[in-house]
Amino acid sequence: MQDTTETRTLSVSINRDLAEAYAFLSVPENFPKWASGLGELRRVDDAWIVQTPDGPVEVCFSQRNDFGVLDHWVCPAPDTTIYIPMRVVRNGSGCELIFTLFRLPGMSDEKFAADAEWVMRDLHAVRDILETKDA
Image 1 (cartoon, helix red, strand yellow):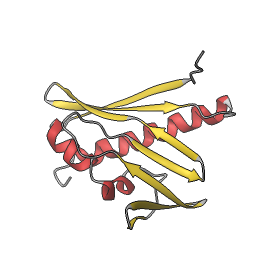
Image 2 (cartoon, rainbow, N blue to C red):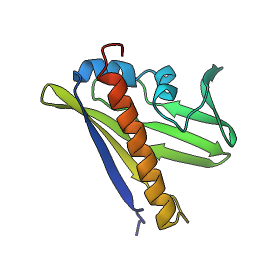
Image 3 (cartoon, one colour):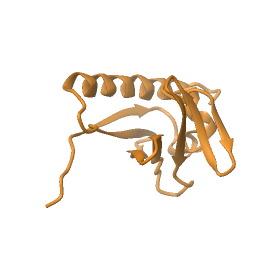
């Protein structure tokens, strides 16, 4: 029998063409512009390294694709990988950015709720960026 974990699917509607939104969202260097948990992101050999309050962390991003997949994996410690599924899909003339938040083992209700609030702040931040003409 396989175990599953609690998840929350969080999303935000964005008044921006899907292709334009994906073009911005699929560039790793753009993540720190809206993902407040990521500090300075730099390329080191074949890896992306982000500076966090807890020190450097490796982040792997999905390859650009035609399906709106923006999955990424954060490796905060050896033998620890946090999978972050994210998609952008058409929603009328705009798009919907969808983020699945997994509850990590041992995470309290309060911490899980706080993480969901944090993700929603980040989703609203990227929406605000994408809805400006500069993005």
